[in-house]
Image (cartoon, rainbow, N blue to C red; front, side):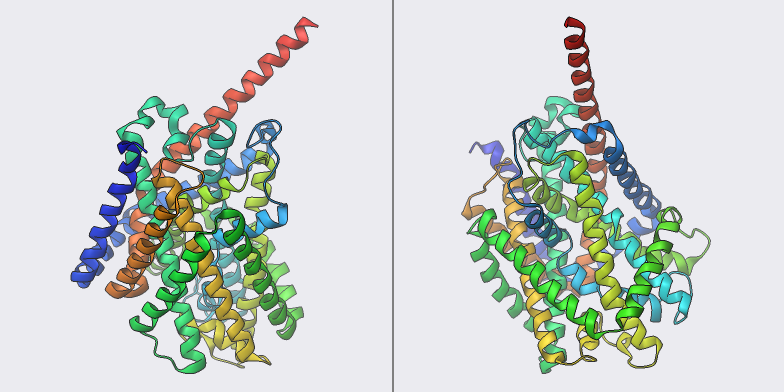
Length: 505
C-alpha cells in the first residue's frame, strides 16, 4: 500500500489518540469543551438538522418511485450475496442494535411520564404522543439517512467499479480532486464521525449491561464495572471480526434476530396484548398524519419545547448522521445485486415497522403499567427501565438474563461491523481489510468509549457525536447531489441507446 493510502489511517489514529489523551489527563476539560461546542451547534443549527434529514427522506422516496429505481446496484448479471432474510438481519443489527434495546422501554416512558413533547405528561393523549414521537425518531427519517450513504456507496462500488470510500462517491460532482488531498480530508471526516457514532453506541451497551447486572445482582454501577464489561466484550468481538463478514458478522446478526424475536414474543404475550395492538394501530395513524409537522417542528417561541427538541430530536438526527458512514458502508457492502427500488423499500420501511412494533411492545407495556398505577418504572435510570419492566412478568430473572445476552451480542455485532467498516475506510476502500487494521480499530474504539465514559459518562459521548455529525452532514448533501447526477446521466444514456437501436430497425 502506498503512503497516501496510509494517510487516512495515520491521521485518523493521531486525532483519536489526542482525544483519548485529553480525556485521560483532563477529563473535565474534555467534558466542558465538548458540552460548550455541542450547545452552540444545537442552538444555532437545530433548524438545519431538521431540514437536511427531511431532505434525505424526500430523495429516498423520489428514488423509490422514479424510473431510476430499476437500476441495479451492480452489473447486469450480479446476484445478491445474501438471502433477503439474512440481509435484513444484518442491516437491522448494524443500523439499530444496542440503541433499540437501550431506548425501547425508556424513550416512550420518558415522553409519557417525565417530559412530554406536547406538554401532556401522564395523560391518555400524552401516551399516544409519546409513541408517535418515538416512531418519528426511529422510523423512516433515521433509515433515510443510512439509505442515502449506503446507496451512494453501493452504486459507486458495484455499478461504477469505484472504491468503497466516501470520497469516491463525490467524483461525479467534484472530479479528480477526490483522488488527492481533498478526498483524503473527506475520508478522515468520515472516519472521525464513524468512530464517535460507534463509540457512543458501545458506551450505551456497556452502561445498559451494567444497569442490568446492578438491577439483578446489586453489582456496582460505575466506571470500573463498565471497564470490565467493555474489556470482555472487546476480546469477543475481535475474535468475531477476525472470522470475516460471511462468518462472524452473519452468524451474530442471525443470533441477534432470534434472541430479539424470542424476547419480543414473550413480552408481547405476557403483557397486555390487546392494548398493545390497539396502541400500535392508533399511533401508526397519528405518526403518518403528523409526519410533515414533526419533521419541521423547531418551536422558536417556546423555550421548554425547544429544549426537548434539542435533547431528543436533534440528538437523534446527529446520531444517525454520525452513524451513517459506518452503517452506510456496511449496508452497501451487503447489498450488491439489489435494485435501487428494492433497496429503498427494504432499508426504509421494513426496519422501521420492526422498530415500531418493538417500541409498542416494550414502551407500550411500560406506559400501561405506569398509567394504571401498577408500577413506577419511570423512576429507574434509563439503562435499568427494561429490567424494571421485565420484573413485572413471570420468569423475570430468565428474561433479564436473555436481555443482557441480547445486548452483549448487539454490542459485539456493532463493534465487529465497526472494525470492518473502519478498516475499509482507512485502507483505501479495500473490500476485505487486514486483520491487523481491524484489531487496531477494535482497540481504539473500545479505548475512546472508555475515555469518554470516564470523562463525562454518556453526555460526553453524545456531545462528541453531535459535533462530528455537523461536518459530515455537508458531505452527505454533496453525496446526494452526486448520486442524483450520476443515476440520471445513466438513465439518459440508456434512453439514447434505446432510441438509436429502435431507429436502426
